[in-house]
Amino acid sequence: MKTKIMKVLMIVLMFAFAVTIAGTGTRDASAAMTIRVAATVSPVHSWSVTAKTFKQDVESKTNGALKVTYHGGGAMGGERQMVEAVVRGDLDMTWTSDIGLAAVFPELGFVNLPYMFKNYVEADAQYRNGWIGKYVTNYMDGKGVKIIGIGENDFRGLTNSKRPITKGEDLKGLKLRVPEVPMYIDFYKALGVLPTPMAVTELTTALQQGTVDGQDNGAIVTYDLGMHTFQKYATKANQIYSGMQMCLSKKTWDKLTPEQQKIVMDAAGKAADEQVKLNRENVAKSYAAMAKSGVQVIEATPQLVSDLKAASVKIWNDPKWEKAYTKDVMDRIKKEAGK
View (spheres, rainbow, N blue to C red):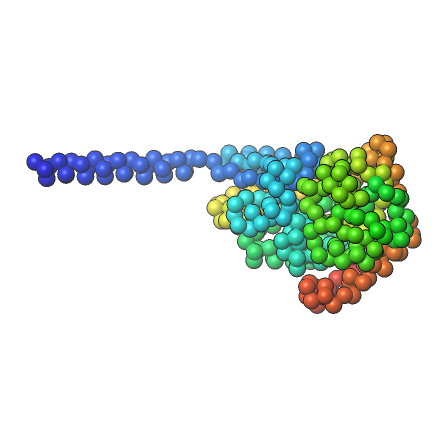
């Protein structure tokens, strides 16, 4: 009797196990996979706007097999934290400035060397569509991150609450927020600035409380995040160009079918092109809006440009940065980007 009961029990357990396996397989096959995208920018920023294009393309062309959710405004941390999360595979994707990448991988900081590009034409040719973009993409591939699109952060300017900046001398003694990148710190120290490394997610509060006098940042982020409301002066220095990388964790990438990978890549490329176009339109609008709000917007004077370039030469020729970025990279920059 006991033997018969044991046999019946075994049959019931095997049947239950088989049903569980079959049920699990069915759910995995039918459930949509969600790609979580995070960024630090505001809802009206070009990254956020074109993230909608990316989402629509991916979801429609995969017939809903892939879903995209977007988390902006630094909801998942600063750029450094999000890049680290993507490397670990804890976050699927982040749209980050290259400054965010360099905060985690300092050897990529060369992409933000001051006065590397004179204008958008040079930035497009050498960075977005050139060897610099390819270098960063290949480097990050070895770190567990697939860069599926390159957009734009923009040329950076200066704002502060103390005085107009029309020459290098005006920067001396100012407490300026700079990104968490060692090269930035050295550049501003050469100008007599008291640089304060800080994530952009902490910056608005720091400006409001007077922890820092001003900041190095792009016009769009400055305006969108309301940082101009605590600043009297904005200078269009255009001292540093910054790109944006669409970083997808390779752990997420490897879960996609080849067809899905192509769809995601194509959608990112399309979104990146749209983002750059919109971004460049919004720079002028942001400076105009700041001026309308009462901020004194100042064009970079020849003296200021000359003084900033003199400080940049010290960085370009510092053996420390040649060692950090490699001689091959610095030689190529001096030959091509530094023309």
